[in-house]
Length: 408
Image 1: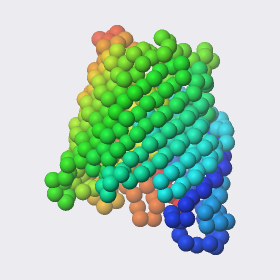
Image 2: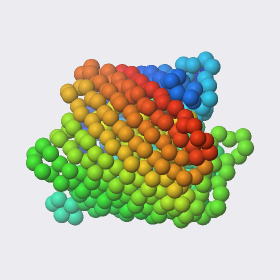
Image 3: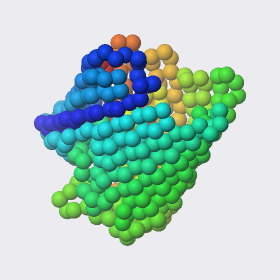
Image 4: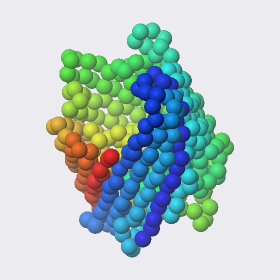
């Protein structure tokens, strides 16, 4: 059995306008308890495993502008004899203290320490700082400027546990600097960003979001990304005794991404997507991304049904961010009160000889259910076929995932 515990201290300074006008002390407890299971018993790669997760936060407000919180997160592996790629999920027996300072005013916020990041290409938990400034330019248009610094990263979610040592193990303990600007509103925006990973790569890119309403209920949404990554080193290798997600094929490359979807209120969605990677791997995606392919429980998937999984998915990892790989996918989902369903189909075609190179076909069907008394559960069945360029035979990499959680 492996035990993974995360203890953290959280201090939040917030503007009085975002708090209730209450000068009296208060205390409250929030968190969740749940279980997650992945089974690959029907496929060729036997890396089935499960976890029991717990999270709890005690918050105390001694002053109208200050909130103090103390929390704990833990995960217990449920398999006594985990097979194959279990280390892709539970690589830490103990995760160091997580804590951060958070200041929030009307237009400005700042975080310092170890916190959860939701940047386009730097996700999960990072160690560093994040500054975010917003300003209204007109009645319907606003400006956002953000900057971040990170010198370490950890993967912490219901499926995966690691220490704050990802940069050390996989990226030679280098630092990352991020800066971005975005102009627009809820229906349309354009953003520019720069990710500088010291001595590893420099990535500049842009994203465009557009929403076209047809009526009060129907709308068409389009999202596109383009990024060019300039490599600052020819090869990146992790230490011999370190676990890492395979050798990265580093070099000058690019990412092109387009997604178009049709929405009916907040109950139905269907769409198509396309992703194209240049000569070398798009390394930014391995650090975290906000697309529908990742299995992180904090990644918004279709109506919160569990995602089929992407790069961080053990022996069932996607190849869509490998160099010289082109991917097409389609998806759909609908929601009936507390019950949600989704369908996701992806095909990625790569020409390089890699562990997950060649052609991948993935079809997933998911269901989610959330009750009025804070129970949340979901499941996804994934058919995945891997055709390697070095073999005439394809590999059945199918798997199943499910989770149940109670929030309090």
